[in-house]
Length: 138
Image (spheres, rainbow, N blue to C red):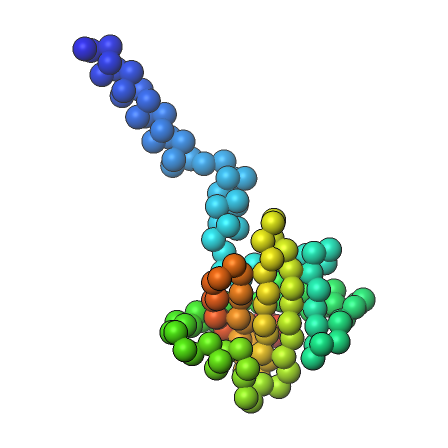
């Protein structure tokens, strides 16, 4: 009986140490998996401005600015309110970004305003809406 208790205690201690001291790679993977604002790469990303494809330096600049943007606020999305975010009325410009994250296809709809940028993230059957600070400000 004491042998079982000692083995259980040792296993519990090992699990506790592993849970509290995860390697950096595992922590980065966990954070990246549940990150709201994902980081884009040039290879798997296509950017469209009013159905015209954006290429070259302009694409690289947009991806860099998008990756540096800071999330300002996440919005609650209620059933029936999707139209408000999918077709904004007073946006300065609208971009569509299609990218791949692993084997998932992700579509980002960006609506740029003077003081913020609204991002609608669509993947699978889910939709997440959030706002970021303007890409060109720090």
